[in-house]
Length: 268
Image (cartoon, rainbow, N blue to C red):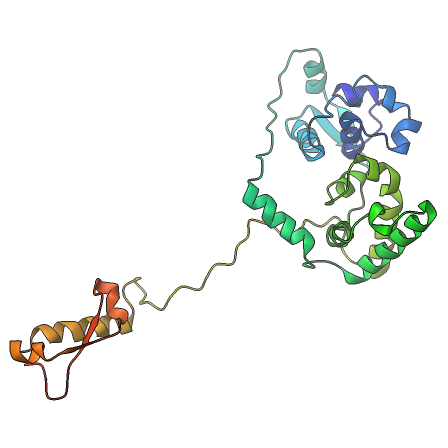
């Protein structure tokens, strides 16, 4: 809230989060907000977390969004908070597990959800930037980053910061131009922007095995059980003549081998 106040309540959540994170984006420097006492106040906190906290303050009534551009304004409760007369309850998002991070990395490296036309447009822009700087193209952005851009299609600086491979420096150096490229392409092609990447927690569930409606044993398993039961009714001499065959679905009932009668042996 202190940062919103020092910014004269004329900026939105994305911009405020960048100030708190300590971004040196051109517009922040031009506005003199890199000189604010709140600039970089939360530099050790993830950008996504800062943005989430701002939304929580809005949800708890300490801030409100105003006008077409959702400028942040301090509410009456917000002024009480600044005076120390109220306390917010901010929750920090749960950290992703190593498995979740690996799944997210696999998604980022794949072509799932990537708009190929936008990827090509971004690659051309990357080539132009690299040529102007006399550096290899991968120094600007790698293919993984371009694919993630073409998948997420961000149109805000905070959204672009969420792209895999985009840090504060690249955000400041290239963010505006790449966002402009994404916006132009999406408007021309009339496709959605600021899309969420595939959920790395979604897993493909194997189809259930064949069973009856009550979850009992399958028909083949029941048949094997009946077959084993018939064996118990055979005369002892005939049972002795049984030969063993490889295990079958009768194993579902704890049998390690199935028994097949020789010719001439029949149940009583």
